[in-house]
Image 1 (tube, rainbow, N blue to C red):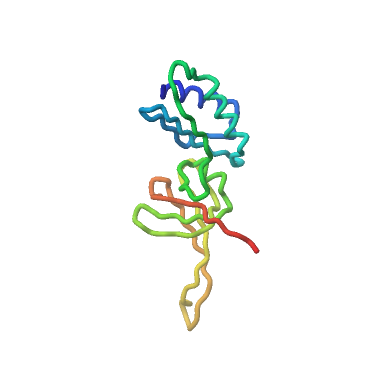
Image 2 (image 1 turned 135 degrees about the horizontal axis):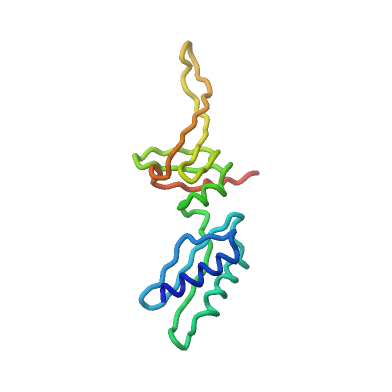
Length: 155
């Protein structure tokens, strides 16, 4: 069952290349769960089309199943380089593998690493007071424990 579902997902995503698979599971009692994301986001219509592409090609007479197709939630961590690329320009909260936390703007995402930029107030090297310093970090994906998009609401 799992192999057949994967084939159907791959075929449907091939027909809509702006979407990509994040995760899918098939439990022992044939509960199918598919999580997708998209370069321009995921619409309800995208989920319906993917659901139909799977459901209409499986025979309920052969095996009973339930099917859930959903988009990645806004509070879910980023998992693949493609997700980082679509979020360039947005603010991320990144936890590194050595437990460092960085809140910064994602300025670049390649297949190997991300580049983060932020500003911080630091003491002046000479004299009293503080000045603003621009910081940058280039993090290979292997050094990222978790990264989430920070949702901001403008007034």
